[in-house]
Length: 468
Image (cartoon, rainbow, N blue to C red; front, side):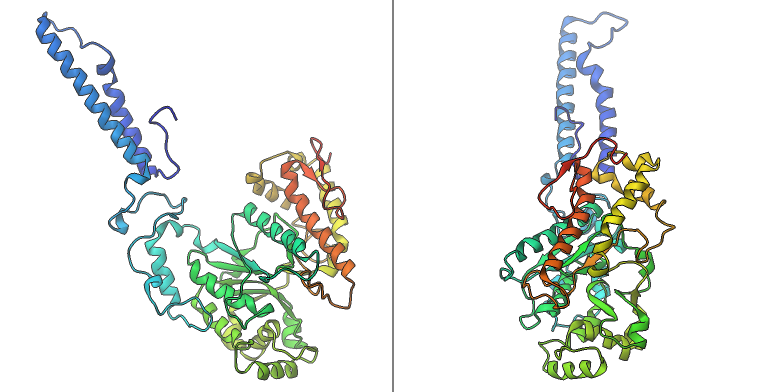
C-alpha cells in the first residue's frame, strides 16, 4: 500500500466517490507544488518572488496534509468507532454486512421477557424481527433467501469406535456445501432443554437459533447422519414462498395410509417467523419435557398402526399434527416429494457408480466447458451449464441425477446400534461411498479425486482436460 489510493474493504461507494473527487482537486493543485509560478508580464523583485514562493510552498504543504487527513478518515473505520445514531451508520453497503457494530437503539434483545428457550413463548416475533432489520439495514438485501444450516450431535464421545470419525466426515460434508453456496452453519452438541434429548433436541436448537439469527429467513435442519450428495444443487426456495415448513414425504401416505414413516423429520426447512415459533411450541408439547409425554406415546401409537416404538417421537408428532390439525397448520407445510430433499440411503448408494459414469459421459460428449478447470468461487456458472444437460431426465429415482441429500436413517453411526434389517458393515460401506462421492465433487476444484469410492484415504491428481 504505497499510495492513498487504497480503499479498505469497508469503504462505501459514497466514500469512493468522495475519494475520487478529492483526488481531482489534489491533482489540480499538483502543478503548483512542483512547478515555479508562471512568468508575469513585468519582472518581480527578488523579495516578492521569495515571499510568493514561501506562500505557495506553505499552501501546498497545508493542502497536502488536509487531503491526507481526509483520506485517512475515509479509509480507516477505526477513526470513528461510535456513530451517534443509526442514521450515521453508513460504513458499508448492502453487500457488506455490518458485523462489527450494533446500534444503541433498543431491540427485542433488550427485552428481558424475550428468551431463547422453548418454554418461553415469544409474541409479535415478525414485528420484532422486522424492527431489528430496520436497525441493521445491511442485512436486508437478500434476506428472503438467507439460510442458516443447523445440525449437531451429542456432547459425549461416541460409543462406536469409529463414530466420531464418521460424524466428522458428515460435518465436513455440510461445511463444504455451505462454503460453496454461501450459507452460515451452526453445529450444536449440547442440550438446550435437558429433557429434550435424541431426536427431540433439534426443536430447542432451532428455536434458540431463530432468536440468535434474526437476519436469517430460513433454518435448515439436517441430522448428523445426513449428507449432501449433490454439491451443486440449490434449494428451489421459490417453490416454498407461501409456506413456512418443508419436509420430505408423501401426502398419500400421510392422509391415506396414515403411516408414521410417511415423512422424515430428520431434514427440514423452517421459516423464521411467528408461525414457526407457535408450531414448534405445539410440536414440542409432545416431547419428554411435557407432563403428557407418556400420554402422547399412547395416542401416537394408537393413531399409527405401523408404529412399534411406544414412546412419543418428533416424526410421529409431526405426522399427527398434519392429520388432526390440517386446517391449522397444513396450508403452510410443504410436503416435498419431487426430488431428494431427503433420500433413504438404501435406495441411493447402489446407484452412485452409474451416476458418476453418466456425469463423466456428459462431459466427454463435446461439452468442453464442463471440463474446463475453474476456481471454486465461480463453480455456480458451470453447475448451471451442466443443468442444461440434466433438466430433461427429471429428479425421480433412477433418473441418473445426483441425489441431493442422502440420509442414513437407522445406521446410528455414533452409537453403533443400527437397525437389525441391515449390518453395520453395510452401513459403513454405504456411508464411506456416499461421502467420497460428494467429496469428489469438492476435490475436483482442488485438482484431485478419489478413484475408488470405498477408499477414503487415497486421492489422485486429475489430468488436464479430465475426463476427456
